[in-house]
Image (tube, rainbow, N blue to C red):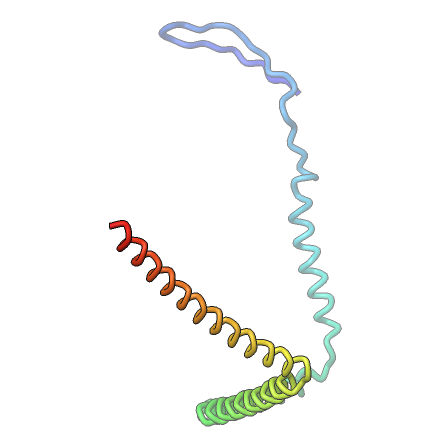
Amino acid sequence: MSVTTDVKKTGNAVTGRFTLKNLPTFDVAEATKPLYAVLGVADLALEQVKDVPADLGAEAKKAQALLADVPAQMSALPANVRTTAHKATERATDLYTKLTIRGERLVTQIRRQPATEAAIAEGKEAVKKAEAAATAARKSVKAGEKAVEGAAGKIG
């Protein structure tokens, strides 16, 4: 598609003629496809609604009966929440107690194992040796101090 236009301008006059070629085309059939798709969805929904069972009236009555109970349920809601919270707290406390007992048993079992008892005994022995080494080091430092004082006294 092409469009030919005469161009005329007053002041700083522009005159002439130009032709626009290869203008984009607007395909109406392509542009209306999304609209048709939406209408198709609506039509399908209406078709499926026709297939709803005839006992919808009975279901509506059940729903009305449930809705009639809503005010009573709302007034009982605070008590139900307190009861549920209390039960949840009891369950959490019970679980915590059971886990505490289980952990305590595990520690007792580990402490009673021969390997653990041997490690504790070795640790105590290492502490005794470290204390003895510290005492020996202190005595050695004192002896060194006396030797330095004696040498200093001889020098002068």
